[in-house]
Image (tube, rainbow, N blue to C red; front, side, top):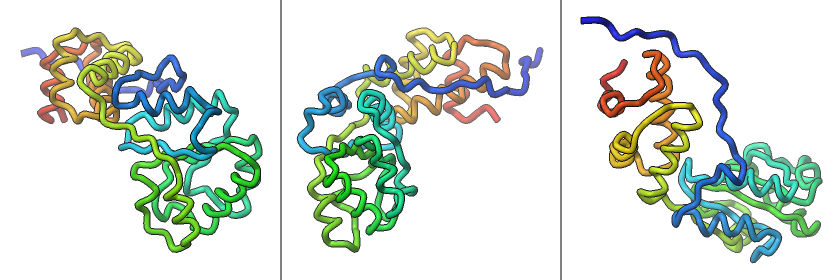
Length: 226
């Protein structure tokens, strides 16, 4: 029996695109997309996009940052001294804000300074800020008042569309049967779709083939490939 030709997978510089035209909309994220597109007509100068990992929060934040001129900062990088610089453009994305990600006093100062300056804030988080345990009572009040738009897991149609796009972005060929097979077996999330397509890409490269078959997908999902 002939062995399957393999080669070491090389990094080909794949990078996910975060333009508006690259965002796939569906019932699970339509409210969040509508919020981003209606800016600056927001219910509050500061809003939060909340959802699980891979739900599309960062993609929407990137879309908003492009239209608003916002800077972006990781929650762990929030400091008292850095607040004025972070708000220099009048718009700021705080990525992956979560409980205890930064000093309460620093976050409270940033929120207060944004309010004083009339700056816009878009926060991404995995859980609603209103439920976080924080030591500063005034910060807890600010977080409870933050309007939240939730991104839910994708429905079947959106998950299939994400798989098609992810495969096409990596120049992988797969028919509808393979897409349907994957969509009913992977975790129902954008992160799950990205993960399986990345695995398929690596294995297809090792086999020197760019067509994804149902057999290959089944091998990967069974963990049969080492």
